[in-house]
Length: 115
Image 1 (cartoon, helix red, strand yellow):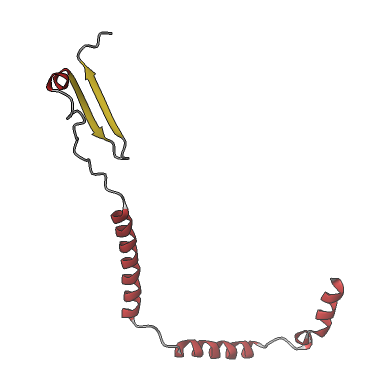
Image 2 (cartoon, rainbow, N blue to C red):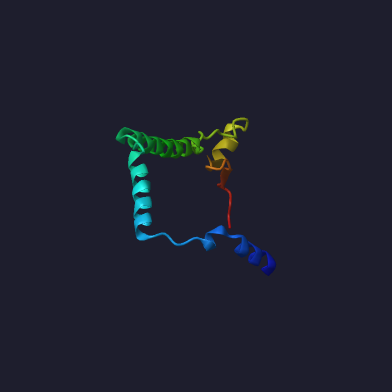
């Protein structure tokens, strides 16, 4: 590795050159600044369009996330005791509901229950 480093130092042509004078450095700086001044600047409306596009992307992302969320609509309770006689239906009462995840919960109240 040191051999390669030494070879590169020996073959470097800049080592033998004299450093820039202050006049040369100032002249080079003027050339670079003049080239920078000649480059056209993007119009103001172009930057406004980029900003509007970025805002539109954010709004669409938020809206899409909101619209894709599943809506938890509570379904109406369907009585499960339609085939049971009126006497049995009156003696048993129940409460049914469906949880947001789709789980159905049924509570049956027994009038004859004695703890």
